[in-house]
Image (cartoon, rainbow, N blue to C red; front, side):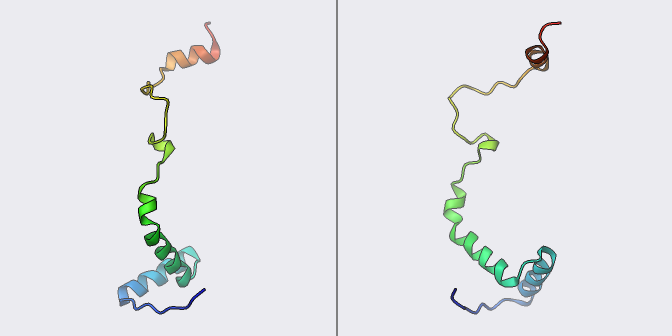
Length: 78
């Protein structure tokens, strides 16, 4: 690791200290995490979240399930 100095406003320093206390992380760790997020910003903006419907599908439109159809497929016709 390489040491560097950063000047913070009083509000920034106080907020950083509060966050460090709440999360149990060091101020230095929080600063490194923030720098990493800034450096990865372009890459993070292009992420695809499959669980949000932004993934790759087979091209068929989404059709919500019907409760009666689901019941019959699981329980069979009674």
